[in-house]
Image (cartoon, rainbow, N blue to C red; front, side, top):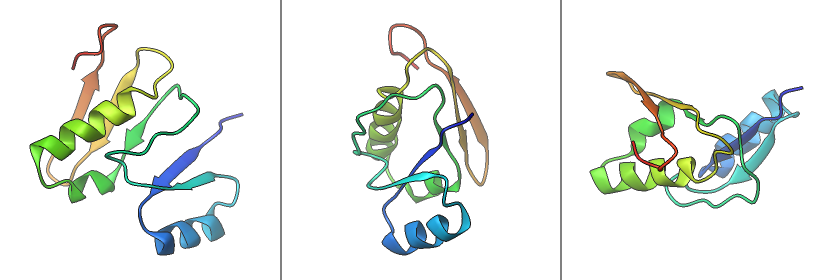
Amino acid sequence: MVKVTSVDISEDMLGLAKKLNPEVNYQYGDMRTIRLEESFDAVTILDSINYIKTIEDLQRTFITKYSKLSIDIFYITVCRTATMIIKFGGGGGI
């Protein structure tokens, strides 16, 4: 069974998402800074990455997400203009 946790900074979007996919664990928070208790085998950011406006915020987002991975794994981010696939190594580098 796949367990999914979703994070959003919009209460309205979380409310809609809960209606559409009630089996998902939804958390209110900012993807740049949220700290969840659990770790994950995979992390993805879909179109929400388009809201990141600065390199510093992009770095904070990636560091926040990487810190929650339980293993070295591919991290996939989909942007409007490109798809970035980044493999994080054991040293935490990009």
